[in-house]
Length: 305
Length: 305
Image (cartoon, rainbow over all chains, first blue to last red):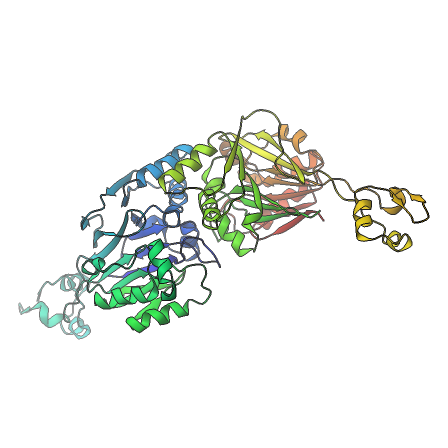
């Protein structure tokens, strides 16, 4: 299945230099997850031609404005578009009071159901809302209750060997069955075992999101060996004292977490508006963890094809 | 004095095609007014290099999301920038509950005073908050209590005749006095009347803002003979039934109001996202009122120089 991360905003608190605050759109085969929803998320969904109607679940890390002030507008637009499907919003205690308070004071009457899942800020939580992936939430350390999220594919279809299709004259129905692991019986009655028809099984891909957080080794078990890790890198390490004070992380610290957790790839973001040149942040993280990529608004990152 | 209107967003409810919802920045000599604050207003302030710190007063037309969902982010950013000056927010009853509710649920503690002026939805209101202009609010007809605003210069400096400066050897202090209407006494003791030193007095310029509103002739006395009128034009007149049902106006109706109110120039905006080609809206309004201009995000319109 396809599993891609689309960056709607990768800046920190104050949107600046045309960089939007935090939001990511996780595109799966038939559904999508939104992680955080900073101001302007719906504007960038439209700009980058991503379908808002696919969004089934919204995961909110914490209740700072740069992660949630785009929610009322997005959900208001769902309403104007006549949405009927239920929407699940997962986040810290208080997300429901925030949204319902806004809707109450700005005359919004929803045409669809919003299911709130408010999380207590303790331990690992399993959230199963989607057909194709498992979602887990874990607590992080920031100035207010904050969660990281891990999204893991439930199953990955087998890749069929192209020569098998012609050799055994497989039609579309049979190809679909083979991809699910079924054996094939030929017209002559011979049973061809699935293993002969498919390539080695691919592992289920995983993505973890950690923003906002102070440098915290307790995160490592939650994100260990994920294929792609997004970790905030608000500052260069020369401002580590500021990072610690404001409970953010530096690019170097993001690299240290990625290395210790043995992830496949590190994405960094949540840049302070003081930085014009983001490359310095990537360079710093790379000294700790080579496979690092700085992401910008509009970027698409493939977790699995 | 300089008096310009900067369009931060000119689209209607759903931001689309990279057009932002409603917000305008009125730039005066030493201060600025924001009218409405749709989602992303602070992003476009930064994009168009307009100083948020100049904003002294925010005028809110009504409490629909596309006119106010940018407020929490903008005010939160004032906070992060360490603002100390008080901010006045004028709008319908409920604007205070909306904002304070958001701040309560998203951990915002303001570093400066916000003075709320909630208006009852009746008759003309005089709001005097700024040094250089008078502000009036007037009720409009929309689905929820909505106000139009009129901004008029308090005084306009006289233009000095260039030859007078050399003839009477006027220094900077004397030039300033002449511009305020003072006569000059020469070294020989001759009194030169101000009228001989200056050109004909310019009238004080005025701008009126009407969005959102149904077609409503009762607006005319409030906006009569303003130099520049912004009037919403959500639809072409072929959708007049829809405009009436949703209490919006068509481009033709905007032109009719401008004509009847004998304004200097008409600006139209608040376009439905269904329109790719906005020129049709301007063409339609021009059939009623020739001096019409459609405005887009980023446009600057001069009311007075």
